[in-house]
View (cartoon, rainbow, N blue to C red):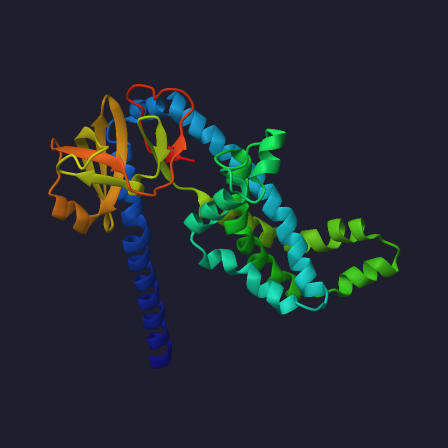
Length: 307
C-alpha cells in the first residue's frame, strides 16, 4: 500500500511539473501574442489580411513553401534511402555534409547565392544574365536558399525510420516480381509517410519569419536600427505600440503614414528609453538584407506578415 501511494504521488508530481512547464513555456507566451492580435477586434485583422502588401507576401510565402517542400521531399527521401540502403565510398562524409546547413547562418547562404549568381563577378552571373533568368532576389533564389537550410530536417526524420523498418519486405516484394516504383509506392512510402510529414512540418517552421516594409524595401524587423537622433539615412517615425514578448520588445511605428514593425531586446529598448508616443529615427542596419517591394507601399500597410 505504501509503495502504491508513493507511485501515485510521484505520478501526480510529474503531471504537475508538465502542466506548469506547458503553462509557462507554451500557453503563457501564446496568450501574450494572441491578446494584442485581437485587441482591436476581428475587423482589424480582416483589414490587415485584405491589405495588398499582406496578400502579396502571403502568396509569395505559399509559392516558396510549396516549391521548397516538393524539392526537399523528393531529394530528402532519395538521400535517406541512399544513406541507409547502400554502401559506397564517401558515405560518412556525405552524411556529415548533410548537417552542414543546420550550422550555417542563413545570412551566409544568402551571401553565397549572391556571390555565385549575382552581380557581374558571380560565377554563373554572365550565363544567367545572358538567358534573362533571374536567380538572386527572385523566386529561384528564395527556393534554393529555403531548400538548402531545410533539407537536413527531412533526412534526419526519415533515416531512423528507414533503418528501423529494414528491407525484408522490400526484398520479398522484389522476389514476387514488383519493380522499383511499385516497391517504393506500396512498401517504402507507407512505412515512412509520417516521418516525411514531420520533416515537411519542420521545413515550414524553419524558414518562416516576420517581414516589415520601410519605404519601398522589405526587411526583417530585427534588422532595423532605432535612434533618438538622425544618424543619417533614417526616417522619422512615431511609436504607436510597444509589445513585450518574452525577452523581446516589438515596436509598431508610423513612418510617413506607413506602419513599420521593429524588434529589439528588452535591454536595448530600456537603453533607448522609447515608449508609446515617442519619436524615433528608423533605418536598416548596415549589411541587412532587403528586397524591393512590388509597387509603392500602400498607406497604413499593416506589418509584419510572413514571407
